[in-house]
Image (tube, rainbow, N blue to C red):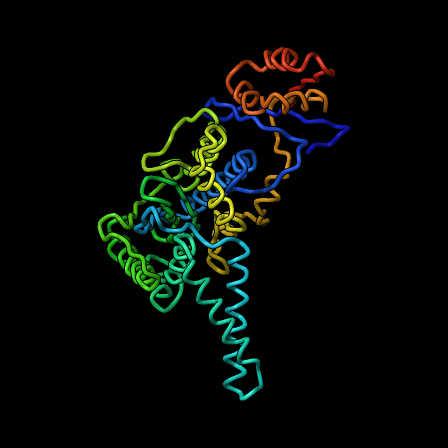
Length: 379
């Protein structure tokens, strides 16, 4: 979908590392960080900048940051997770169960048959939960309770945390895991934090998984290491995501251990293989309305520490036109020809890897010279 009068603009940004990032403006955006390559790349770039500012703020005050990874064992037959509708329904059923319990305790009248039916439905949905649902519940248990409250007081106090969910699809099924940035006021070593906070967090993590019928390996189920800005930190992770997404149509950089969601999408489009399409559909429905990046809140909000006053949603980031070094305006007729020929990804690749002045002729060759192309650079 595009503005019929304005058309579409091809925008190219020159990155500090010598690479270039291309994108389109003037298009409607969905804001899906999980299912849309265009939106995902844009969102990842912004999140990388936010996390870099957080890391810089922690370093400036003499603190330390650690990247904690938590995983769980999984098998090919494990479901990824409940759909968005199922999660909303389960949440409502839990609320109703609490209401029934209160009514029963106070001696109020309520529909016992409906309460029984709701309880059966709730249990059915709970049994359908998948790896992602269990992981979310386990993280909530890790970051709550008296033990977590005590952990937050160590090493000068926890400044805050940022949590990212990563999912890949491999031979052993969905691999869902957490990367969490833990920032403390004191500058301490990874060994000290691992032996205290890390070990206790993993114990709570394992117990939470066990209650849901899952488990984690003592040897491979967790990892904690000290990180610095630009050296394998969470900001660097999001930068890599942006590069992977924009390069996914070229099948570059497949991760050891499985396909990323965008690589799964490429395979589904290129092969139309039934099991791959089914896998993508499961991914699309289970990822709906889930957040990729979440932050600690209140007094331990890292965004406040870094001066990030506005918490932009994924949808807001995706719809924002980012500044670029060069622009090329594509009239509506040219854009329709590009879409009809399925040249969008090729055009982005061209813009990122070829001299910008060559793009105009490349477009005109494929669109029969429709409409004037207006190019300009940012001053």
